[in-house]
Image (tube, rainbow, N blue to C red; front, side, top):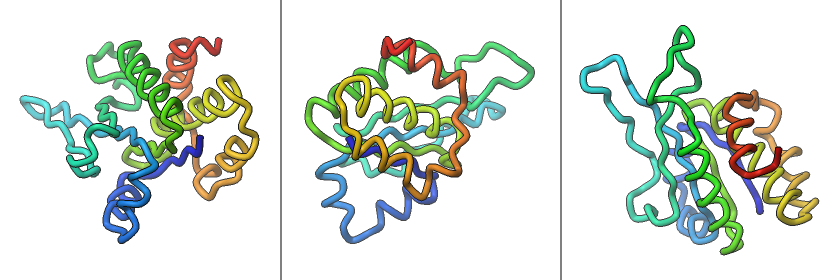
Amino acid sequence: MKISVLSRSEMKSLVLREDFEKIAARTFFISINNIFRYSEPPVLEPSPIPEKYAAQTLVLRFDDDAANGEASEFLFDANKARQIRDFANLAIAQKRDMIVHCTAGVSRSGAIGTVLNDYANRFIADNPGDFEAFKNSAFYSRLVPNMSIAMALMRELEMI
């Protein structure tokens, strides 16, 4: 499975490309969006992926980390990890590529993309070409995966 990690602005640019229809025909999307929780009620940032691709898009909203270590409904949890697991297994079964995006394309999406690359291309099947393509990609050097998100997802995928 080919996996890419993008920032929100890169995802918006991709959606505007003339060949987006071709890309979307072979791709599942994980769209991680912000929650502006300091407004009342909290404002949910919309996904940049057009609604017509809803069946192949998993939209999640969670923060990178809690402020001051607080527990929050806006954090990554086991339920979100299960949603990603089920969605990734569907993409694998349908032999689709995966694009994961968040605001910066660094921490949240970096964690999910890195774990899914290991899961799909090493744990489930041996796809050394796709596994190495992820590690040799232009985006890989900027990734700083959020380890609490990565560990929670790895537990849900039974990789640890």
